[in-house]
Length: 453
Image (cartoon, rainbow, N blue to C red; front, side, top):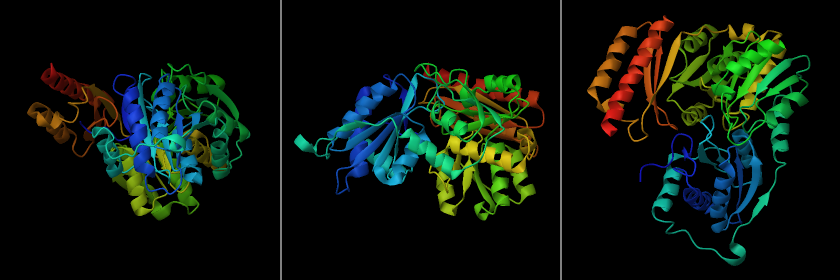
């Protein structure tokens, strides 16, 4: 069996790749690995996003958890950062989120948090997979009163809302804010929190049907948010993804403020307050070159990691950094939560707007973005990591690297969660880099798909 866990848990098409059987096995093996040292009967928290497959997978997962003698509290629809926060609050021994984040509705995923609210290490994930591969050999069978039970508690979101509001108690009175909740897990929490802090909120995409999550909305589709901000004369627009661990924004003119700019805005503000530890922000290789230029201009060190929030978090913990994240809007405020948190990021950004008295567009001007082209080459999961094995692809990449050396860059990487190879080129001319990115992506698709046909 190939490795089950990607950069963000186990993902796949629900009921095809991520089956009920696999969900039950993950519940059983995961609960055992994470709680086997406990001297008490453990309790795991389970939350999900709004996908139609969530209930199916949750019930299978929870059956597996109960079968090894652990109890479950099912919180229903809950953002990923809420599960992380509630797990580390002390009530639960581990947490599980059923979500495929920003991916289309047919996908779903299962990711675990340990008792401290952190995603699992590779070694723990490997241990869980080993039990599954051995058909659970070595996991004790329990019966009678030792079997676990499930409790349903749909009020836990209130604890998370209060936590975020108390962490960043900004007065938002006088601000008109459009929210795009992606028909996902934030459709209640974000609207309630920002409204309760005094803002005039215009909620959009808050009617989840189970099949409309991320469909033309949320942080991966900002066109509708931009239109609504301009239409309503709003001060700012905020967009979350399906599980609400990401945030992107739109200024009062409808222009996008991406994760790089949000980190720059919040990082500079924290530095002015003396709260940016070591004057450092942790980012990934996908961050725009303009972000690194901003860092030099502002006296902020930018630490660079591989793509993936787990690598950002790992580096943040190593150097004790207070903020880090990705261009995609996955931003971690480590002094406050253990994972990316869209609502927490939103309040930090809004706090900067309020305290500075500046418009969102003025704050976003802190960095200039070098033109960037990002094209996805759709290939099979089995082939996406093999592009370097084909000379025709390697030579094309090397040629582009020479061409853009000193005036841009080329970055190729397989997606950690989808059957894609991402092609990113930065340069001075948008039309040129768009054309070259599409050309290279087409070459990757044609070459790798030909080998599987």
